[in-house]
Picture 1 (cartoon, one colour):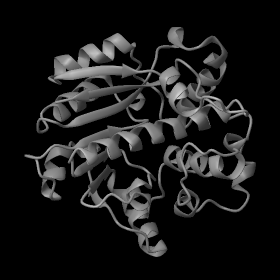
Picture 2 (picture 1 turned 120 degrees about the horizontal axis):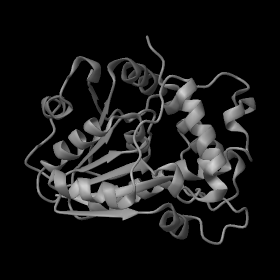
Picture 3 (picture 1 turned 45 degrees about the horizontal axis):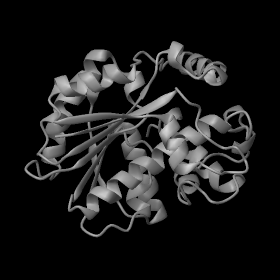
Picture 4 (picture 1 turned 90 degrees about the vertical axis):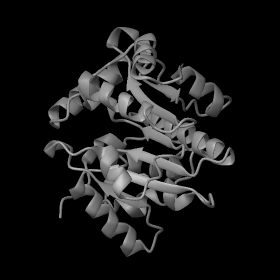
Length: 276
């Protein structure tokens, strides 16, 4: 059985590391990520787990997780009963959240999703609706989602975090168009990377290292968007409203006043929030 993608494992371990080494208040309290990822002994000595060297990236990961989870909770209070994660990886929201009536659908490639299913079963953790989609074979994720019991006539929150940079511009626009067809009252939240020239000066070196690492692992970053561009694309795809949420806004919301200086790098990964 295939193991999860290395990026999914790294993201989960950064959420775990936040609880282990960063002082409270914790932005996200993911006490399941480590058990789910099941890394080998000595995982904290990995270069990509260095407490200081990865501080900004760790903050970006926990900040985006908190922002999306808060958005899901807010929409759930408004009566939305469906949450769809595109490229779910080792996300643990379905296991940590106590939101009665909310159905969580996780879309991912069949092999890593089968691994996650096995891990969740072994740990005795709640199972979301797992929707395997073979994108390389041209499978339609909306069709697979409907077949898994998704109620197309009802609104949903759809999230795509840490995915758009690996996809072509055509694939990203197709995703926007697909979600824009969801029932009125649906919300799409997506992260995207800014072009290098828009990165905060202090973050450019780290962002470039991340790009080089992604390229070396065979999963290069290929899509970048200026905020106005991604907002325009969302409106062109058919969304009723679209807005950009910056890393600076995430910092002000979740990292203000921290004595340890933990915060996401400005001008790296940003958010699009759009509604149907």
